[in-house]
Image 1: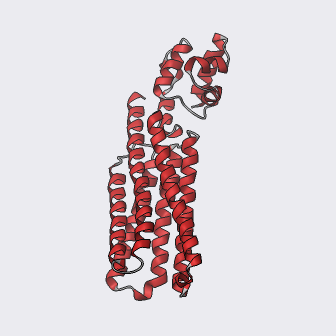
Image 2: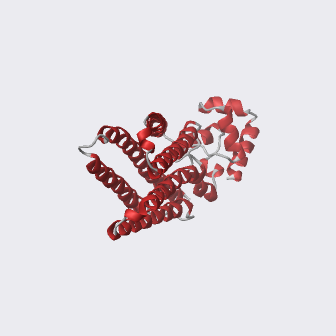
Image 3: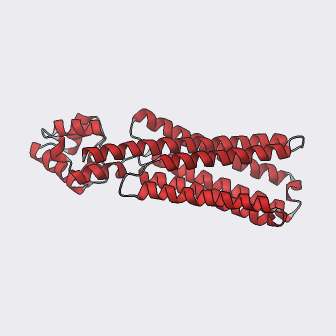
Length: 286
């Protein structure tokens, strides 16, 4: 990667032009050229071709085989401008919805003292607020990285693994609060949920950290299962509150929360597909 940046710098200096002059030719910022030269970022493929032409050299002379293999890992997962805007918008919408739910829950429950009638209810409401707040923080981190054009595979891994891990801990805590009321069947279903979450985390880590391109199919399957579990949990909760005074609150909170997390999961599937395609292309060209 450093060799690629060094090749750009040498070619630019041989032509006697500045970083700003080169940036103007390519319709990018001087900071972008600087990042290429110091090895912290690669240009996208079309820009790389234009770069080679502007420096009166070939792309093969600039890029080594190692550069091609490294390219997908240090560049943003999604590089096409329109798709990046969609990515940022989806993350921002999910973040905003959950943030609104967090503040709404805090305000509603603080003004309704019936919500704190028992230790269980108080603990559960506080845990839910903390869970929402942490998920909001993770998504906000994703929004910032996407806006800064820095949502690399490693950042995507952190976001995905963090959300899955938080959801696992949230489910375990919910079980801990009410384990005395659980039947054997409910306990078994929890074991299945835990196993799915752990397997999902392992698959995500393997996909993002493996030095060889891995099939994205396991992520598609487990993300689908993850979405299905969320929908089942939502449906069971809805059935439980039908005909009660909690129905309106449930429809407001849980529906929006489920839609927000569903949006993020769909985005993750798309990002996984894009990254897999880029890795295959880099391997073929290398």
